[in-house]
Image (tube, rainbow, N blue to C red):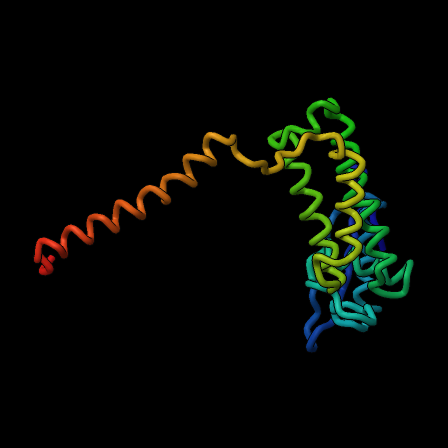
Length: 199
């Protein structure tokens, strides 16, 4: 029976019998905490999975984040589908990337040092979500996601395409071996004509 103490908290005493010995557990809490404890205590009693995942499919790992991702896909899509992965990309990955990109000045979108971290975070987020659902990464959805963000944010960025060097450099690179070949032939002929074939 709960008894109110001077500090306004309730003192709960729970007697539990374990292997023939009575153990006394007591703790102090306000009423919300006590109800929370009772809920947690009852959930442990009702847990028939013994702390393991009750999902009907395998999840990437047992981290809390990964298990949450798998539960979301199970609850909304009955499994780890590409539709669920697309929703996760939109909600968890793209929303963050887009809000960060919008916070930048549009002229900074083409400066790699300013967007590298955002781009890496997006890549990491898509990989983490795919790995949790045991969907191979990269996949078609990831490719479409990155093509879309490149089209939306980076299409006006100047690309550094490779071009031919100036004609002067091309001429120097072509003429050098052409001139060296006859010079080497002349040196070989002179060396053998003198009868000095030892070196």
